[in-house]
Length: 391
Ligand SMILES: Cc1cc2nc3c(=O)[nH]c(=O)nc-3n(C[C@H](O)[C@H](O)[C@H](O)COP(=O)(O)O)c2cc1C
Image (cartoon, rainbow, N blue to C red; front, side, top):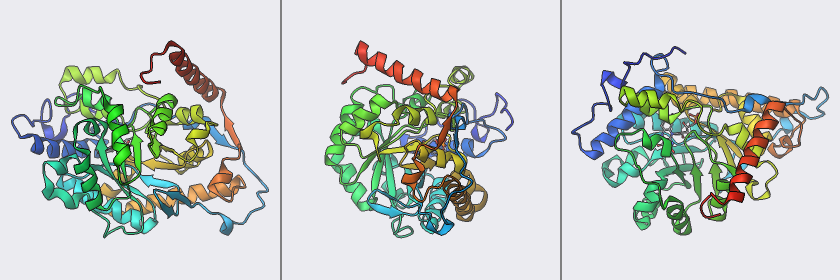
């Protein structure tokens, strides 16, 4: 991937994407279009940074697995439905024409392959209800879980009753609440005040008619916060750790040169997804509730995530790039590739089910063990100092 030139901005605009003077709703749609443009053109923009840490994990190969390929069962239960693969398409888009087209292809691919799919933030629907169709896909994908998406800050600010009504109208099976303070701080009109968001989420979960997922967007959620969110009634935590799409870098391409220079310093911010999974291993309250995403790029990344405790694995950037290049068919081909790799890894480790894959037949490098130990002790130390609010 080439390094983009410092003068690259989406659509050749300078500064904050050239949206000044536009009304807020228009700016929101415009921003979504630019995000897509930046994420899709890897010859001009470098949006992936760091490492998930999953490369430090390996499987112990079984030369005599004593199982037959047709015995392998990759199915799991997720958001109240039985699904064929422990794999989902992460929340991405909607609210712009390009986003609508992409969503349609993603949803078609999800229905064809039997996997869950997330929509991008539905915040825009409260200002521009005419884009309802960008997020309502039950008719195209009646058999797979579809989940809506909303920002954590909105759970503090919006009338929950109105959101719940909308979720029912959209006929979604769940809703993902995203946490993205890093991204917001690099948006000229982004949120700056994150007080009271945890309480907003707790109140939201209380009345929400569908299960709630809380996700990060590429910097990860550490184990102590995972526990607090589970205690607050959240159904799944999607770690969305680092090693993949870095949203500070994405926003930086819409920002001023000095902000872009500041963003450079956040190339390695956050917790690698693999290291977070390692730090959560063996925690009974996390069992069946942890989703691994952020920087997963290969089929083996999914297999390794499941082996160290994830319930399912999510991918964002690989799917949006696939539909951009070849529509739903290319996304289906990607799912087929991931499935082939998962099934092969299961057979070669003697695992009939996803639960069997978690039998401890893993190799962890000393570097991985050290990263997990360091994270666990940093969190324990913080707990002793009482610096984490509400714990
Ligand atoms: C084009 C694009 C749009 C996204 N929009 C949203 C969004 O609206 N809400 C959200 O929670 N996450 C959004 N994300 C973040 C992803 O869900 C995911 O957490 C993040 O990109 C890290 O995963 P990855 O490394 O597989 O890309 C978006 C990602 C992409 C690539």
